[in-house]
Every structure is written in structure tokens, then in C-alpha cells.
Image 1 (tube, rainbow, N blue to C red):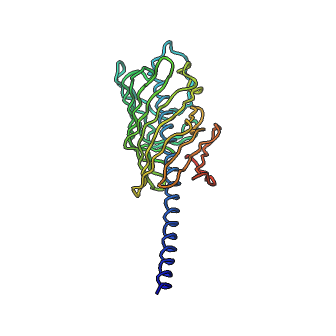
Image 2: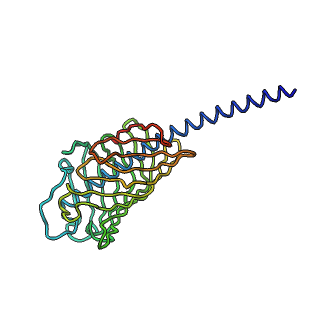
Image 3: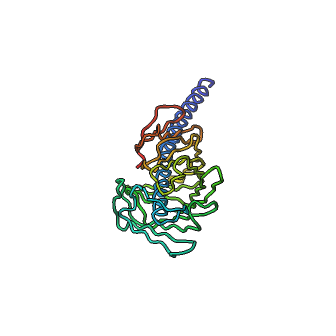
Length: 276
């Protein structure tokens, strides 16, 4: 009888370990998936920022005087931009890429971004609220609201960026939602506000991503992200993504202008992902 009990116990323990191992693998794969979603979300938000800043600069809404020649990426070379009213604030900026066009930096966008700007972009306390209407970047549909608030002081030039009800849908129809707050500091280029090509931003903060199955992961930037306007993607920094019993690290690289990032879990072998 004792031998039977022992056999049953061993079988149960073995089964439990097998089930636990399978669950762990599923959880880890989910974390890889959501970490990729996080990286893409951040990158598409940075792209929206590039569009917004170029539109504001070209329409003399940054607040600098005297006006100097504009140097930009040419993102809006195939877009229509309207600003109303012509005088005073708040202003509504509509950036329309119509049914789709490819800008000079090789990115295809379609649809509209609408920006409601309370005051000059570089004035402390000014806000800019971005919303999206059937808006796509290289086939990725972007939805939600991004609110920029100028948090600059005499010594630090920066903004808080809040994403609410964010949703990304891939070209194959897979989607996820995301929200969170980023704190953005301009570390290079602030003294030349109409030359966007020398702008470099440092980004910190927290975020939450939920996949189509309702599984959520939270993240924190552990090494400030670096976004150079001259680069299409985030080029440096890392994010820690918390899983149930493991931690993923998203690494955006060494500062080179490329579209590559890596994800590793608990220090294991890194997987390479493409940001768009």
C-alpha cells in the first residue's frame, strides 16, 4: 500500500513540474511578445513627436525670436498642414497625409494627426494634445491621445508626455493597447530651435501594455532612451519589463541610427527585433 501511495505521489509531482514548466514557457513567450509591443509603441510615439515638432516649427509656433531659417527632415514634404485660427491661441493643427505618401526619410504615413496647441511649444506650461484619425505609419495603425505639457525650467528644457487609450494594430491585424507617462528632456539642440536636425532627447518614465488576450505587463525605463531627430528610431537606452516571475530587458542599442533592438529575459540569450 505504501508503495502505491509513493508511486501516486511521484507521478503527481512529476505532472505538477511539467505543467509548471509549460506555464513558465508560455509566460516568457508572452513577455517577449509584449516587450516587442512596448518597443514598437515607444517608437511610433516618437515618430508622432517628430511630425508634431516639424509642423510647429514650419508654422512658426515654437515661440522663438528672431526667426531663423528652418532645417527639418522633410517629414511633411508630402503632407498638407492647416493651422487655425491664424492669430492667437489655442490653435488647431491638422496634419493630413491623405491616402498615403512617403516622406523624404523613407517612412510611409497616411491619415491625419490633429494637434490642439494651447501656446507656443517652448513656453513653460504650454500643452499640445495629439489625436489620430485613421493614421498609419508603415502599415501600423496608431490610435489614442498623447498630451504634451511643457515642464521647462531655467536650466532644463523638457516636457511631460502622457499616452492615454493608446492602441497599435499591426499590418496583419494583431493589436495591443498601451498607456503611460514619459518625461522628455532635450539634451542637444535647444539653442537652435528652428534647426531640428541637431535635436537629441533623453526619455524616462513608466508604461503599461496589454495584449489582445488581456494580458498586461508594466515597464520602467532603466537607462534613459535616446531619440535623435535625424534618426528614424530610438537609438539607445533600455526598458525593464516585469513578468510574473521573470524580467525582460529591451535594449535599443549603442546610439547608431538603425531599426534594431534586442530583448533578453533574466540575462538569457537576446532576441533581435525590428522597430518598424
